[in-house]
Length: 156
Length: 156
Image (tube, rainbow over all chains, first blue to last red; front, side, top):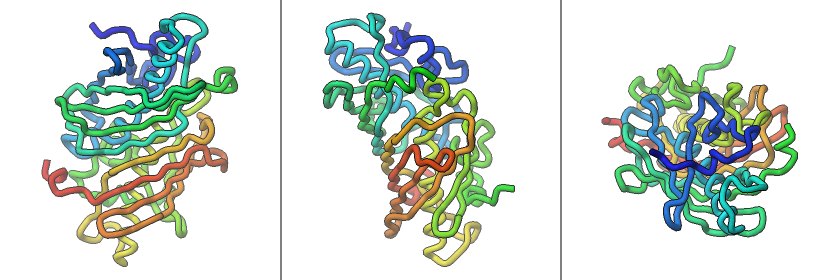
């Protein structure tokens, strides 16, 4: 069984993200958790998530990197504060910028692994590197700048 | 009625992209066309494409920039060759890298406009800047490096 993701601890009103919100019925429900010193998420694209037949749509890859990057930012901040996801106050990050390099086509029909490394953690900002693996080969690499969600977005 | 997009002229076997393929039944069907010296595409996110309630999911924005960027690359290359989409040989680009800056939250519930500018067009590579507008305000800006699709991806 898959471990709980940091997204399982997001407050209810912040759990509707299409990529990773547990309460978005149509969404991807990505879950990010620690695997040693890296963060991990797994996702199997649907048969319609294609770019061209046989390969995964790049927009989906960017989306997965986006959600795993903000989840990684939350995980790293909880750890830096010496506390667990689920403790208060909850941590929720949004993406300030995202860079994705598509290194080779990503084959469709298998589970992908997203692995996250922390490059920088400073105050309300976390920079991470997210690599996408298919059959053990890296197919895309992202760099994501995440920032703590502004209060103005949480009140809507 | 919306003009035809360059995606309407992609060869049938390359028209299944989740973001812009006319033959992907579940997909977004994004259409990119010229609007003077810029390229344009319009898209209204669904009610479930949310990041947090009231705002559009960043992964969708990255996806739209991705498809409008590759569409823009094809449009610009057709124009540079003095011919129209639909003439032979067909042009189809893939994304080599994508950078997205999320400038402000993108409100949900309205049609978004994606505007593309060509920054560089050189051989098989086209670099474009894609800006996302909501109610006339730019909410995200992307830079996309597109390359002509390698033959190996077309044969699968």
